[in-house]
Amino acid sequence: MTGAALFFSLLRWDLLRELRRREIVPNMALFAVLMLTIAQLGAGGDLVLFDGDKRIEIDIPGKVGPVFFWMAIVFTGTVGLSQSFAAEREGGRLTGIQLAPIDLGVFYLAKVAATWIYIMMMGIALLGVYMLFFNFMRWDLLPSLLGALAVFALGYTGAGIILSSMTTSLRGGGEIVLRILILPLMMPVVLLTLQVSEATFGKEVFGENLGPSLELWKYMITVLSLDAIYLTTGYLVFPKIVEE
Amino acid sequence: MACSAPSSSSPSPGKGENCAIRLEGVSKSFGYRDVLRNIDLEVPAGSCVAVYGQNGAGKSTLARIIATQWAPTAGRAEILGHELGTGNRQIRRRMGMIADQSFLRSELSLDENLAFFRSVYGVDGAARGDELLDRFGLARRRKDPVSTFSQGMVKRANLARSLLHDPELWILDEPFSGLDQEGQELLKNCIREFTAGGRTVLLVTHLREIGQELAGASIEIEDGCISASAGLGGEGGS
Image (cartoon, rainbow over all chains, first blue to last red; front, side, top):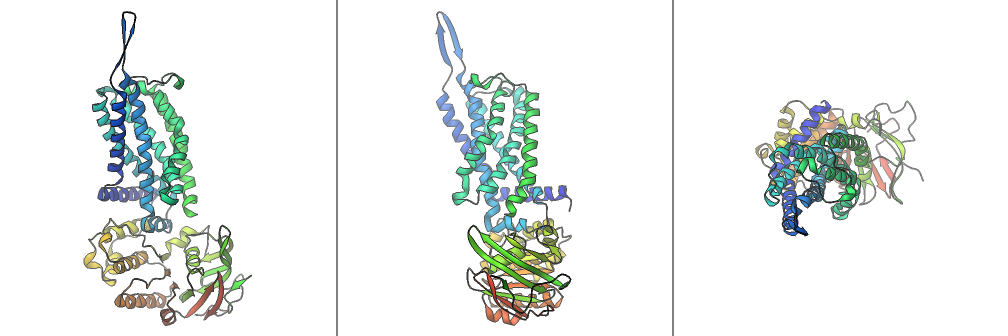
């Protein structure tokens, strides 16, 4: 069986499992929506300031909304990552895969692809809720936003699957350790993602330390390069992690 | 301390070419704990060798090393003519294993599970799976999710899964636990047929009566060493 055929076969079985169990996507989506609800309540409405007779309106939800959106993606993503890999440890499934005559790197890539699909599904659901809660009706920006989400989620799952393969065997599922490890690792991508807010949400977020806004194409190229590094490292390292 | 199968001297190059399993000074440690120590073993192809020992003696660790699941800490091993480590993928293609876990996906039906393992082992067609399901009395439950199966049925399904790719070496770690009388007889017949076809079985069990009934040779593992062996002659006869 060729690597591509094996990849699609493994991906298909992973998706079928999620379709039957309906665990990962609903769990992530529920967590993300709850986070966004609390964030929206906290953000309140526009802030109105007066400079003499001059009235200044600051769109607080528009300025902090993107931060909450990406926070929800990052934090709920860890739920998906750990659940996606924990499912492989049930009943010795991972051992079954390990003892099969396959390239375990392909299994890693299939696992990344499946988890990427779950995170994208959660992200799209979250985006719908975001549009309602934060009155974000910029349909023209949706392709940019979905593109940014896609490249962000790819690197995130690439790094996350490697980390969850190491942490799910820990006591309690290792979810806390996963969060401790993945957040610093993803920090450069998170910062870049916030810098591209003007292109994706139509507004720069608060945070002067972030630096100037980033153009979308520059963001895409940079993050795709980081994705390639995460995925290549994962492909090479994953078999060694699983073998031991 | 060297722990060898007493009747079999240390393997020498050129000897034991028809060996299915050949271990030289294999040890395994987990942290500070030595689970296996300096094991030498030759299992001739076409034989059934029973591995006895008390709980925690190191039987399952030995089985897992031979099955390529774990790498030994020291020593070298050759399984089905391939070096353990570098030849793992070739070994896995020709080896089937039953362990304490089933490797099956409980939310999938039995048919889907077999299709999954057919895809990872590159087995064409469903004929082999159909034959095994008939053999293990599972044909009428083939469309049901594995999560609805009893423990004994899962064990039978697992046996079918392990034979799907027609392996040459069958590693069975406590395969009789959870099987009813009928299932046990079925498995015994399978083991007899398997070895009669010139293939090799490594049977890890604490049930000596069954081991003596099926295996032409045996080893006893005690505290990580082979403390006794029977039927493993110098020329590798069983």
